[in-house]
Length: 362
Ligand SMILES: NC(=O)c1ccc[n+]([C@@H]2O[C@H](COP(=O)([O-])OP(=O)(O)OC[C@H]3O[C@@H](n4cnc5c(N)ncnc54)[C@H](O)[C@@H]3O)[C@@H](O)[C@H]2O)c1
Image (cartoon, rainbow, N blue to C red; front, side, top):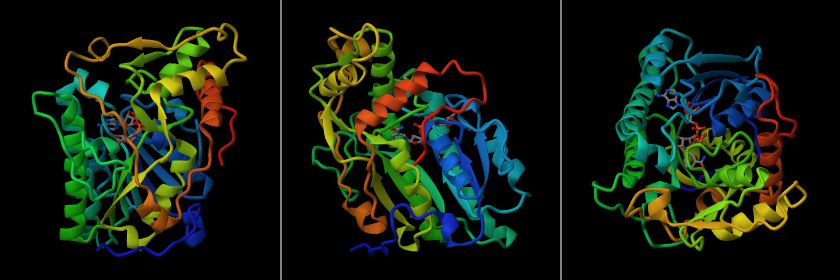
């Protein structure tokens, strides 16, 4: 049996527990990372972001903020430059080549980014001891993809992971994230690094872009253009979507809770919706938009959308008991709210650099 963590409130802010913290966020200009940066800056902490802007955008971050340092660089080199700087109190590792589509299109670069950068980041965090500094609680972003095509549902953190053959590139994303998890847990075991692994399920919200195959921004973009959302396969496959603004406050809380260190957590929503129903919900929610009336989802075979023989999962749902017990996690934002805020963000996406979209952070 793994130890049970104490139960602080889910929205406990690290600022409430003491001094402002010095935080490192890799991939902080990306979708989840930039919301986390907003949350940390809002709590009075200082944040260093390392991001090579491969999929992230500088505009996702405040143009200027006294607590924010932005390093536009590849992770590994930037970490070497930070070796002599003041140590960090918290490390959030979100930089990665994200999504199955990107991995299929750029396999070498993606596999190397996901494994080698995580190895460098964990060596950097554990290396704090060489400088006589405490080891920083360190979060490693993993993915529900790690479960592979396991059939038990909902997925529990202790479930087996099941992948297809190595000739099917699709599984390399899952395998690379699984190796990241092994590395994080090994640093916890060998060096005492207070590492926490978080398996994100489908996370959605403003600033997510559709370029890398993310389903909700793709649907919303097409519907705003008065075009039918494209559903791959039959659309019967189901997923659970959680708003990023429910997710980000949980990340510092997991790191601030000692009972969470050395453990793996599912994080997301546990309310499934089929992809066909999601497409219909986007149409209904944005029905007031010009040209949306009369739209119907369009079905596209997987072979056409990805590559011949692509395997998708029929259902992907997390068991949230562990994260609920550990930090009282309970997502609150309804998916219709997320769709409306994402649509507003996409409509104003052409706003000048530095403009902040007008939706409220919780
Ligand atoms: N969004 C989701 O639903 C989801 C689901 C599962 C897992 N995740 C994981 O969460 C993390 C964040 O994902 P996201 O959705 O915000 O994606 P994202 O693409 O918006 O963020 C990733 C960020 O990392 C940066 N980056 C990539 N390679 C880098 C490198 N070598 N050096 C420096 N920066 C680099 C990118 O520019 C980007 O800003 C990733 O680790 C991803 O695997 C996300």
